[in-house]
Amino acid sequence: MQTIDIAIIISLTSTPERFHHELPFAIHSLLSQTQLPKQIRIYLSPKSRITQQKNLTLKHLKNDIQLLDSSNAIAKLFDRLVEIRLEEEDYGPATKFLPIIKEFHSMNTMKSSSQAIMICDDDQYYHPRTISTLNEYSTKYPNSIIGFRGWRIRKDLLWGVRGGFEIDYHIIRSYHLSKIYRVGIVTATDAYLIRPSFFDSHIYNDFNQAPNDIRHVDDIWLNGHAAIRNITRYVVPSCCSHISVTRTHALEQYLVNHKMTRRSANSHALKWFDKTWEKDLWYKFKGENKPEHRNKRTVILREWMNIIEFLKFIINFGFVYD
Image (cartoon, rainbow, N blue to C red; front, side, top):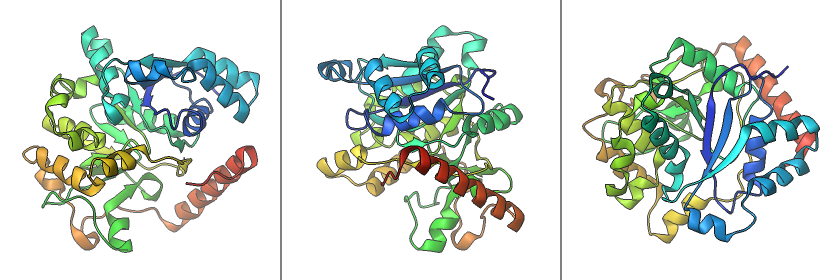
């Protein structure tokens, strides 16, 4: 049974290309949680471009969600929890967190500085225990960023690794873990939870002074500013994985159009914060400092839960391909 018993605010952004497909799935999943949030805020920017397109409104989004699920329960939750906020300044992918951090900083109260905020992407169907799991671990680790996916940084500050086994060691996924694991970077792909007090004003005041490629790899920007203030980042165990509903790849297309690659942008951003990364967290190859993975019993249980959630998705919505 769903209850609005926690004060987490969800913040995300979207693009015109994703507004009518990926975003409705993401919002529906957030309205179908075992524990519901206080608010779901969708920040869109820049306002001038958004308002030119007359179909990027709350009404249109609700209509899209009702095509997925026509129940009165979802409609009522949508009306109560979901809002769209238009931003004059275009922060690109960082629009998912910069406006809300800036707003809560301006309130300048203890309550606002400790507000729990879940940051996520718009192209995932989040499993129904996403919010409850973040809430559980953020209560245990109130001074840390808690997420479901992340990675440790290479000592040479180059992004990525090659080879199937090496990638499995490098990319830390929550449903593989038996206990929490400290990382250098948590990613919004699978959601993470922050508090405004984890950052100072440099996270938004310095943003426009950063090179263009760095401004478009928002995960590293946020984690870099967290590292400056000695905020630890953890990937925590969870029951199951999310379901990707990606159709469009706006960031990849932007990087290609501007003669950049994700690898070069990420590596540049890692080097931008070279003095701030924790030296005891370097990634070590061949699984030397890999996390403790789940036991066989947990593997079977979580795989069954993954299968059940995927089958429920297929029954309700059909097949959605990347």
